[in-house]
Amino acid sequence: MGDLKARIGERLLKRDYGEILSDCGPSRRTVRLLRSLLYSPDDLLRWRTVTMFGWLAANHPKLIAPDVQRLIWSLNDEAGSIGRGAPETIGEMARSNLPLAREGIHIVAHYLEDRETCRPPKRNLEILIGALWAVGRVGGKHPSVVVEVSPTLLSFLADTDPEVRGHALWALGQIRSENRRDAAEARVGDSGKVVLYEKEDLRETTVGSIASVLLASLNEAPRESDDVSLG
Amino acid sequence: MSDSKLRETPLLDELLDGPWPSFVKDMKNIAKRKPMVNDLLGQLEKSYKERVGHWKHGGLVGVLGYGGGVIGRYSDSPKEFPNVAHFHTVRVNQPSGWFYTSDALRELCDIWDRHGSGMTNMHGSTGDCVFLGTVTDELEPIFAELTSKGWDLGGSGSDVRTPSCCNGMARCEYACYDTMDVCYNITQEYQDELHRPAFPYKFKFKFSGCPNDCVSSIARSDLSVIGTWRDEIRIDQSAVKAYADAGFEIRADVIRRCPTGCMSYDGKEISIDNHNCNRCMHCINAMPKALRPGKDKGATILIGGKAPIIEGALLASVLIPFMKLDKEDDYQEFKDLMERIWDFWDEHGVNRERIGECIERVGLGNFLEAVEVDPTPTHVKHPRTNPYIFYEEYFEEVDDAEAAQE
View 1 (tube, rainbow over the protein chains, first blue to last red):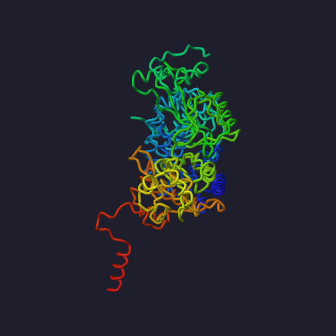
View 2 (tube, rainbow over the protein chains, first blue to last red):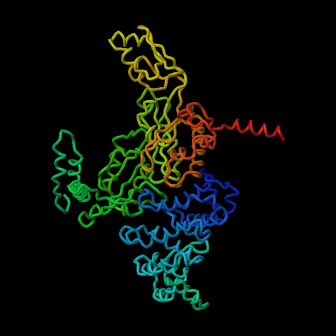
View 3 (tube, rainbow over the protein chains, first blue to last red):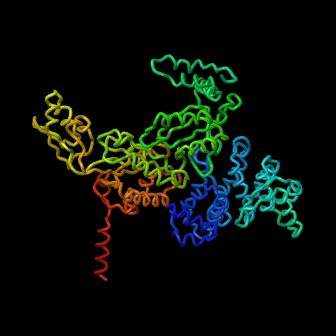
């Protein structure tokens, strides 16, 4: 199994998503190995695994149907586990196949609104950032599904952690929240460092750069009519 | 001495009065130098007074690369007891058979004293050495120090829980296979399954060397491996005579207590109808010098045991009556079976459904077919209660008849 897991890892790093199933078979055993890669200390490998689940949601939804509930449970504070990678994976699955993971993304969104789990001192930063990324990914394709989280995302812009601020701002932009321009303008000078997974790669940036990119996109192609509002 | 004085605990102090050592005494000793334990005493006193627990979940904690091994715990009264605001539990994978050297125990206790409350639970019900009480910021340092010295975390969440076993051949002449070797081998083989939860729910292995089942695997594990033999109980008739000569009541205390009545004693020798022996172990336990397990040893594989959480308690039932557990083959037959079982459960198990519950839901027949195990009489729970059950042969006959008509 160790060899198989290593082979899957190599394929993920090469973005050979389809080849993984050709190589290892469309089986639950393969999915279990992918689930274990969500705990990888290698950040890129972990994120590519998230992308793989999105690919599976689009192409083999039946194969991963049980995983939505299991990932949700792993985020439960009574589960006895940490649920690393769960919010991102649910988000990527919902983006690719909303009916498959609609329930899951609502729970991830609700997670963000739970002050106790998302604010210091009890929060788990990795899970929080994953949840912000997840609503952003879903919001980029299905904004109305997560737009109600916009006020919560705005509140995270004042967070002490730059990763949280950056991902919250990025998510607001993806959702096309009506407040995104004001939010971006307020953060242009924020030099806090952020590592963002976008276009299947990790890149180092700053909160200010995310704000600038967002403002540039708004100025290039004003789409105020596309604004997604809570009303 | 801590920076605050010891908390008043009049109710807990009553536990110090009995004839037996009390955990309160130990905690009070540690509390003199550990504020965390002092606050723990205070919170426990409050619970005794109010008759309500003051622990809660409320956060996801762990170490990098692992999905389990740490259980987040928080006080619901952090202002009153600030030193137990976080009080996480760390599960440490115990050695097979719970054999420690005193140096190993000191090493564990020193690590824990540096990073946590200093209190342990030796051992938790799954088998782990449990470290009780630390804060989130100490988790990675604990993990780094444990692993640098060859220790590892145990399982928690929807994964393989830390496998455990009896002392086996190390201390017990009844052991029918090397429990400690199998337990170690399986623990190493399934590291990914142990540390990175991907199952519908928890999965426990327990290994007992003989049907005495000293680790209660039949009741406490999803996959129970119990040593057995498939030839005849070995009888030393001269030792039987020695028992009789010493005044041991063989008829009253052994023969009449045989649950299947498969034993007889003619006043000189014991004879056993081995085909009817159900491995209760009573005779062997009662006359260990005269009776011993047979020579053709292996294990019975049972499946589905669990305590009551979602559904009621289940005892494991026989899946494979006899497996040789071949060390030379790296226990491959057992591992192949495990893969088939997990493939089935992973695909068909609903969230938080143990394998035993899953089998009850889908039916043993379907399960056996999926894991490629031929049905045997040992799988039969009771005679059928519904006469309208048709077997495959029936459908084949109907198909043949219809084909003939066409």
